[in-house]
Structures are given as structure tokens and as C-alpha cells.
Image (tube, rainbow, N blue to C red):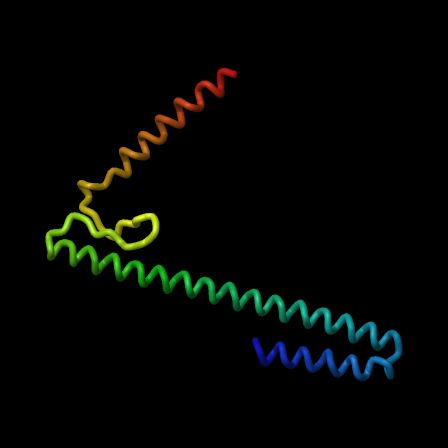
Length: 123
């Protein structure tokens, strides 16, 4: 990316130096070419950033999966019921299925949502 950007900058600098010796049509054509090259460079940069972001997300996901797998085995070996991470929000790394209240919480949230929605529908 850096070498492409430097090459483009050099081409712009060369154009700025030689523009005065060009006809209006030549200068306009060169400007259009430079605008097209700049767009292509920005598209290339955006594509690289997307690839980097996807690679980074996959890396984090892979690390998380490995940590989760290890902590599950560790908890089983040590007969632990839960492992908490030390992060803001208190994310849980592992817990026995019997401690999982997710379904109960979802049911409660759905019930509450339905109850709150009924008075709004009557209006």
C-alpha cells in the first residue's frame, strides 16, 4: 500500500510540474486519469482494511475458542462449576449446564415484553 501511495504521489507531483506545458485537453485527461487512479488506490486500501479486519476477527475468534476449550477441560479436571473472566461486565468463561439460566431469562423477558406491549396495543 505504501509503495502504491508513494507512486501515486510522485505521479501527481510530476503532473503538477508539467501541467503548464500541456494543452487543456491533455491536462484534463491527465487529471481524470489521476482521479481514477486515486479512486482505485482508495478501493485497494479499503479492501486491505476489510481483509485485515476479517483476519483480526478470525484470530480473536480462534483465540477465544482455544481459551474456551481449555477452560472447559480445566474446570472438569478441577471440578469447578464456573470460571469468571476479569473483565468489565463479568463475562463467564465456563459454567456447568445446570447453572445456565439463559432459557429462563429469555422466557421471562419475552413474557415481560408481551405484557408491556398489550397496553400499548389497546391505545
